[in-house]
Amino acid sequence: MHELSIATDLINTALETAKQNNAREVISITVEIGELALINPEQLQFMYQVLTEENLLKGSELIIINVPAVAECQCGYKGPVPDKTTCACPNCGLTMRAVEGRDICLKTMEIEV
Image (cartoon, rainbow, N blue to C red):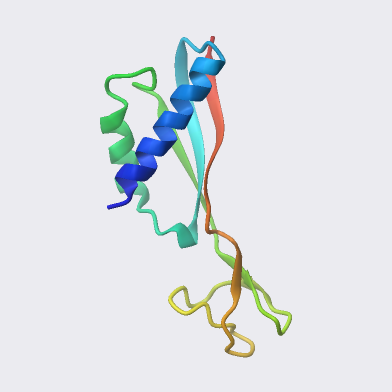
């Protein structure tokens, strides 16, 4: 369950950012999660709620935006990844390289100062 460590990292980053901006309250944080990051959004939401009960993020909303996987192949194909287990190119069968949808990124925070 790496959602716990992901939630912890997101919360620590959000708390540090809130502190740097003299926030009195955090309304929401928006996170982009790539399809290939293999994160369960429901588990992440649960961990976020539990871990923010005793800090400045209490009551804030965690907004999750799913980023679809996009890969490219040496044959010229660039697009969705039909088989996430092998990343095989639908045109030629070679293994593609993921170019989008792998990352987890804290995109925005809505705060009150």
